[in-house]
Length: 170
Image 1 (spheres, helix red, strand yellow):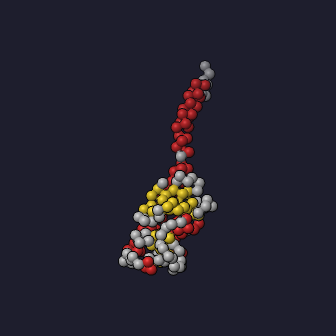
Image 2 (spheres, rainbow, N blue to C red; image 1 turned 30 degrees about the horizontal axis):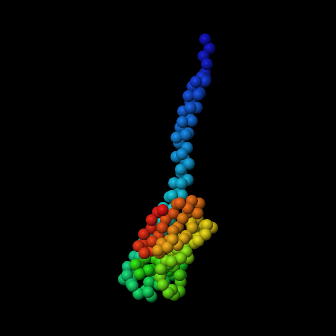
Image 3 (cartoon, rainbow, N blue to C red; image 1 turned 90 degrees about the horizontal axis):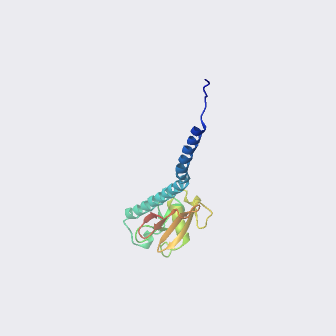
């Protein structure tokens, strides 16, 4: 009697069916990895902004929590040049970053939001813009709040409220 060394047709069909079932259940997991990576990027940048806000708030407290406008304008947060200066609102949180004298320290336009990003996040000027030309889109949302949304997927982002200092994910 001759012994065959191979698989029967039924064995091959069973293996193919099992592989198909595994592929159908595993594929969505692998496809969702892109969203997971984008979400991680947003969380990392939100954390960086939150740390910058906390650093600025602590600097304000170390200065004695000044209420006077002149003591909250152009505070040197880091470095020695104007890129390390931040303007603190009366609540003690970063509101904008403009060198020179201001009339009012508040977050009230797109430029304020972008200046906050650039001053509070290391290498921030290479990551955000008011339009979609960079990795994040910076927008003023009203009521002293800024949104920073991922250009590739705008449903991923976070909000900064300069009145309370809170940074929350969308």
